[in-house]
Image (tube, rainbow over all chains, first blue to last red):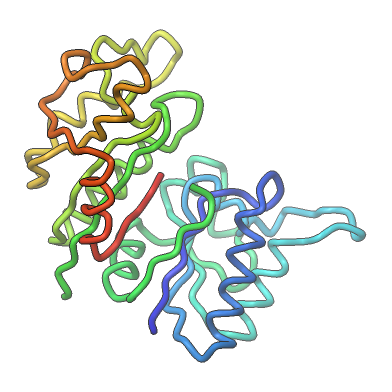
Length: 119
Length: 120
């Protein structure tokens, strides 16, 4: 089955981003295809490479970047939502890219399931 | 490109979080991709349609009038859950736009028939 994932909450105040990443890994482990993870609303902050939590704490931004590197899955950040929050191309963590909301529509249309984390 | 039936479900009050306007943006983009888009309001989402909002008073851009422009996107019906209105002491006459009321069971049916349900 083809999946797409939508993340709408930031990395620290909610469980959504962690759950999305766990789900993304599970999708691939079960042999399904993950077309794209789209970050929208506060979810775009998962891509902020300037994020620097204490070493003893979880680091969701790095975890997503590692997932992108090992899986090759596209991590797409909504351009409008990112710019609004001061997030630009230059501060994206590795594996993320900025694109328009059309990329969410495209993934949702191509996937058999769009799974939202954070609504 | 595949042609899907996409149901957007508004479940949050219009202010206090930014869900409502951002969902409208996503909905309009989906409609621009030539998909069959539907919009439903339930739970606190019904407050988004209440008449006489003054978003400017709290420094927000009014977005509510956007619901009246949805005709341009071929969104013919604004579905509203009858029980959600009643539970909040609201009736159809409190709403700013013409809506189609659905019972909870009919709303469940609409969700079951959609290829995609995007809740916000």
